[in-house]
Length: 338
Picture 1 (cartoon, one colour):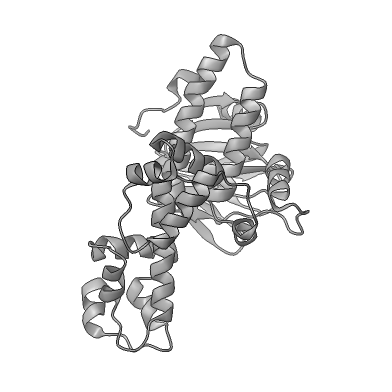
Picture 2 (cartoon, rainbow, N blue to C red; picture 1 turned 90 degrees about the vertical axis):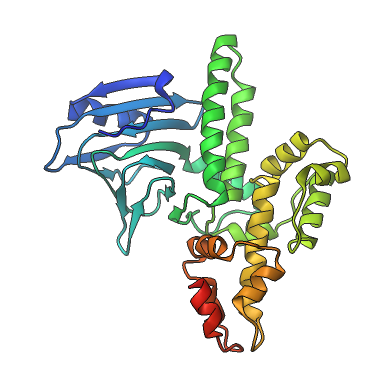
């Protein structure tokens, strides 16, 4: 078994060594499925859960080598943060590792098998397909012509990973307060809509390009702050000063970005600067070096940036520059940043 404490320990549902018992509870809170046990430790499962109107948050550890085969009619998206241990999601054409600290997403229209090791400890947000796709359709102001499919994996340092974990913690705390005051209804619906919009904005999917290009009713202060960030990607941003410049408090600025952009002002700045560096590498003329381009963007830790860049794009900055047909790579910069 793992050693990490459960984030939802106040919401424990079950601790069991019975395959039937854990299968029934996981089917109830996540989705119908078949479960297969492999050789290894005996099942020692733990499940905690928080349910809302349409979505649910589940924390789960099987304590054994297990393979889960979701039923084909399981019309839910599963956003999974691996808190401890490891596992894998097996698709027809690839296998995606569940890595500690990372987020994996399974979409209902893609067949997959989920394999976990004894110490694999996940916290999962179950989002109903119908509600999420309807929310996306309203945002785009058009019917979807293809099923919504999310990218399979997001690393620990991806901006949405921390946002999702913090949102899970906040939702769990807020649920306790709502139950104590017996005031759910509208509050829960607003919470769910906020999460749907955030997931669509933070995590990449096959409609991301259309969604980000579509007009959105941003508040004036979010528009102004966004424009200032976009125009100053090569300089550092002091976010307290930015909030003052657009006439709101730092808390209001933070909330506005989170609600309408799906990520914090700092995460938005990091994301846009990363994109700017990526495009600069693709457009670089002969003789330009990776180090020069990175430094021009105000980045003072090239090694750390290079590692983060590879997590996002799957290649190093040097490899991106080498793929640029206008540029002959400088071996000295390759030695420094490879």
